[in-house]
Amino acid sequence: MTTTIEVNALRVYAYHGVMPQERAVGNEFEVTVHVKYPMQAAMLNDDLDGTLNYALIVEEAKQVMAQPSQLLEHVAHRLREALMARFPLIEGGMVRIAKLTPPIPAQIQSVAVKIEW
Image 1 (tube, one colour):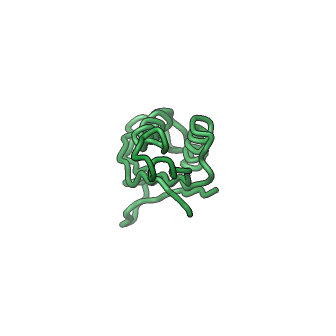
Image 2: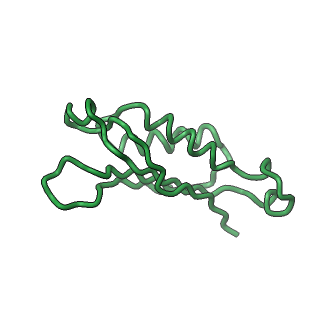
């Protein structure tokens, strides 16, 4: 059985970007995290200690997003590393970082980087 905990479309204001203006003014970002995690104990016993509390994933994502980077690739990697260090029982997952209003002269919903492991 595969068990996944999902945090979908967490909105965070942060200061990531290559251009100096992006790091000065900031932008709206959307963070999605899916992690494969053993949660059989939670399913059987209805006990939070048998799973990964998604509020802790949100906390970790906010902390990582608060540290400016030039590239979304770097942010996604830092978030993956932080999650793996804090929650060593994670068996795999996905991190997606989307910039909702990129400084590109085009009609575009967002740009994003996604890593899976």
